[in-house]
Image (cartoon, rainbow, N blue to C red):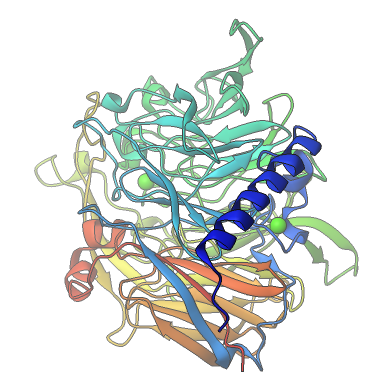
Length: 599
Ligand SMILES: [Ca+2]
Ligand SMILES: [Ca+2]
């Protein structure tokens, strides 16, 4: 090795500094970091070099055409770096990372956000939201990810705020209150950018809140429109000064709700929304009508447990489809509605459709232009509350005796008859997003097979208090598994293959042009399966349970995979006998990045 004299070295350093200064002076003013444009957002699904949306595209197919990591090479997948969220704040990590311009943006439990060097994992900055003592997240202190727009990274917090940070410095650019956390509102979903607006919902369906979707100017945080998802409530549009104008009531007051219960009607919009540019519609899933005790609220209880399609410009509901009308089991229909091309088996025509694996155990395929039901079939083996979905009327064929009984008809008037219900209220599928592969034409659904004893009790609304009117115990249905990843054919309704898992699945799925599906397990493994056959080809132990969806992107000519690890979410808190069965699982909090080992 040739040594350089210290003086020579100093001189060359001075020289290069002078050159750098000259270079900087010669460059236009745009030497600052790249900004995320509307085109970056709408093209996200086809640009392999970045991941700027939750869902790897607004339609949320969670498919990447990248194929360097494939069925042949995946055996050589090795970790590149891992970064701990640190501190004492662990619990559930449900976050999907974003990657843009060589940087990763990842949220963590307790409303934290980290900017990392995507190549090395080096921490660039961290934002820790100061949370008040009185927050009421129902289902762990999770966050599902951020949104990128312009020079901002935007995420929602457990005290129902929306925070925009400068993506390069971590400085707060704006902060807006979504709602009053003391009334039970919170927020954990990843916001979605749609044509310069940031779209969010609200959590709190177990506290008698009123669900809604808000659209704000992503650059300023100011409201553009708001649309309630409980029938009877007024929607509004806002001008630049913040002056609000009535924009029509959602539905017709008292048409599907009796009395005043719609005023605290639930239908929380607590999971990620999706968007389809072909129809200009935002698809929001809505949670249970409040309270859980369905005997208190006769009627369909719009727009609860439904897919609600909202015009992105006007903030008006264009169509809705209720997956569980008059829900009595907490079958939140918040599961994501994923746009895809559906080939009608009768006519051979390709229809603009959307698929949704609902918490109630059925997979629904709807025409995404008008909501018409095209197909519906079970994706779990045991469903007790309905015999099926009538494809003509679009309604469930209820099994009336399997609805929890009316307390006023109980022996003491305080407890209705107990029923056994499958799925349990944690659902055939919960918050964990499925993936669709245009390569195979299959949906990959992270499903769970479990049931519950459930009964109803009297209840009255009290601000900030649990508003259920129900008691329950969740139970496994099988000794050897609860979770099961299923490849579903949306046309035949058949399970093409399945891969069982002992613990309930709670993370999401990624499908790739390499013919792979990636997903994580509470046991801590990130796995890669053959998308056609379900054969397990690779797995890696991440050190804690994976309850978050993996991503992939290309950087410096190589394909990368990333997933967040950290066991938690609703299962340990609400899971009854299932929670006991998996109480050996350890908490954590870290991001992992993988690529192919170079020989
Ligand atoms: Ca992209
Ligand atoms: Ca709920």
